[in-house]
Amino acid sequence: MFLAAESPVLAKIGLIKWILLIALAIVGIGLSIWSIIYMKNVGGGNPFSAFNHEVAPRTTSLMTEGPYGICRNPMLLEVFIYHLGVLIAIFSIGALLIFIIEVLIMNVQVKKEKQRLKTDFGRDYEEYVKNSNKFFPKLK
Image 1: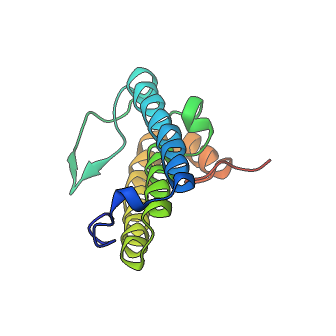
Image 2: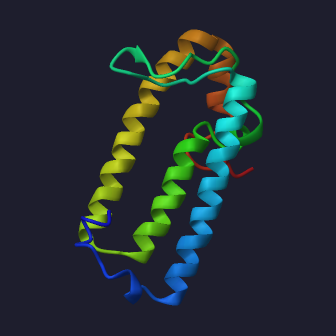
Image 3: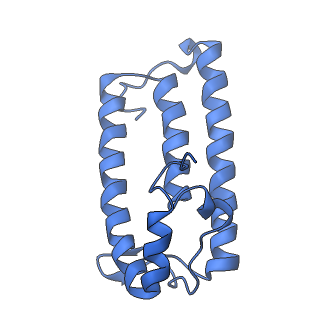
């Protein structure tokens, strides 16, 4: 995003934008850390594989609580939150295009993960999908 925004001068980013960037970074990184620890301790692995090869051991338990009670993909929500802060701080059309491409890639990744999780966890995963949102908290 920084390069796509034509490397803006960081000193020229206003105070309000810096505060938003820092706040969103803290929230996003905090959610990421919580999700990674939860996935390791409860899920016992990782749901993602790349090009039909495991990136890490596959999860052995379906996670529906903790950060996964917020949405099905809290680590991607973290990326979205953090990069939204960056986008606000350095806004440009180039940075916006990178952000949009990133969201599209996230959706492809989630589609692959969903197939694997459905195969591994069947009806329990289908129920979880019905009762949760892909990226954002479900309003009750």
